[in-house]
Length: 116
Image (cartoon, rainbow, N blue to C red):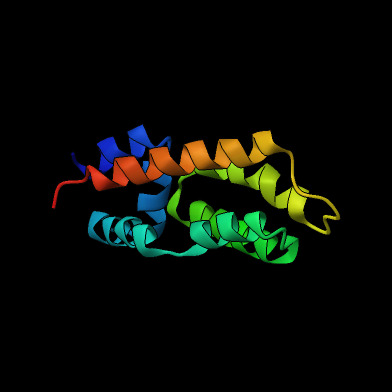
């Protein structure tokens, strides 16, 4: 699959990220690099441990990466989760966590389908 198709699958803003990064090779490099980022694993582990400060930090990192890379579908689900964790005294609603899990998996799946 080519990069533009990948962005269509993951609900991304291909044209926007391409205009910021100036080349498809750069966009692809950073999209693939997203797969090795540990923020999602940290988010899930922190939520399991009820470490809400660390969960917020991880969610906020994912949000920033998604903004930079134009991963709008995941951005749209991680943003409310991030805000629910900001100064949180209780775990976030499960539906917010489930939405991030679903959209993260869709994003990873699309990136994994990229042509070499």
